[in-house]
Each structure stands twice: as C-alpha cells, then as structure tokens.
Length: 253
Image 1 (tube, helix red, strand yellow):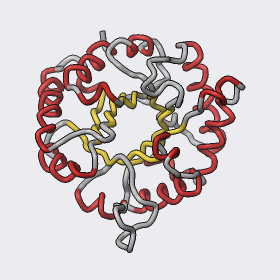
Image 2: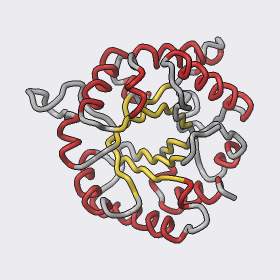
Image 3: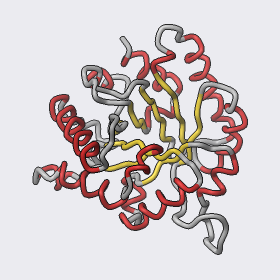
C-alpha cells in the first residue's frame, strides 16, 4: 500500500521565465478550493535554477513546495563554473531536490557522481527524489528489476539515508513517448521494489515510490488502481496549470 499522502511532482526541466509563476498561482488556487482531497496529496514543482529563489519567496507561505532539479556533486563553494551546490540551494530555503534523472545520466552523471550528490544533498538536509529507470533495450531483455536494484544499491548505502529519499521510477523508454507500462507490469515492479528496499535496508516502514513517464490527464487514469504508488513525477504536463490540475482531478475521480 502507499505510505499515506501522495505526491504530484512537476519537473519543468528547461522551461519557465519570471512570469511563469502565474502557472503556480492557478495551481495554488485550485488546491485551496479542493476541500475534498487536499489533505490527501502534496504538490512539488521543480523550476529551473533561474526561478528557484523567486518562486520560493512567492510560495513559501502557500501550499506549493519548490524543488531544485539537480545539483553539483561538490558542496559549499569552489571553482566549478556554471554549477550550483546543495549548500547554495539550501540557503535559498529549498527543501527538495531531484537527483539522477535519466537526462542528467545521459549527460554524464554516473552512479559514482549520483552517490556523491546524494551525500552532499543529505548533508544539507534536502529531501531527495531519486530517479531510476531502464532503457528500451534493458526492458526488452527483461532486465528491468535488475537494473533498478543496481541503480539504487550503487547510490544508497545506509538505512538512515532513506529518511529523506523518495524513489521515482521513470522507465526511460516511456519518458515523453506516450508509451506506458501496463498497469499489471507497473504494479508488479512497484511491489517487488518496495519489498527489495525494505529487506536490503532493513526498513520498518514502506519506502515512498513515485512513477514518472508520459504522465498526463489521460494516462493518470491507468494508475488509480495501483494502491502501492505514492505519487507521480510529471514532466511536460506540469508546465500548464490546466493540465497539471486535470491530472490531480482525474486521479481522484
């Protein structure tokens, strides 16, 4: 079963300008009006670095949480042109961060680098959304669970780390493609992963697991029956307040 409250996390990727806060204003207004379900879920939005401070200031006393999309694997300050450390992100007031997204892995984030990012992010008390996922070839060879277990095992070493880590399962072959895993297949993978995590890290609670990959207002209907899911990591559909709101509405129909 899901661990309680569900998470709707919007990853804006390389999108957004200063006026884009209006998108979140609309989402926030919807949340306030959603008397029936608002206690059942939490909204987290990850804009680009350029908007982090402004969005945090605008929404710190509202119902939307702001997340960073990534960070550098070294902390504090240093001669690392163009990079931002978890310490700098924390100083803004940000509490959440996405690490290990497949697009960053393609750009060179190895398991070693992701592990280092996790260490410095946890040092700064950031709550991590760790992305894992298999590619099309690995799925075809039926290596999905082997790949996911390895990605997690290589970057999370200690039981205590899980207090501030949520796993987001994003099959690479599904991101932006419109192709979805079957409900049965996804539910099976989520159940097996949760059992693996509880056993490997000796957890006495259910770890949080999100799903990401072509999540929109229509596909969300396929996931309502998977009680083990703790929420969703949403890409393109999170950049429109209407689409994002429709995802939440359709999930709770």
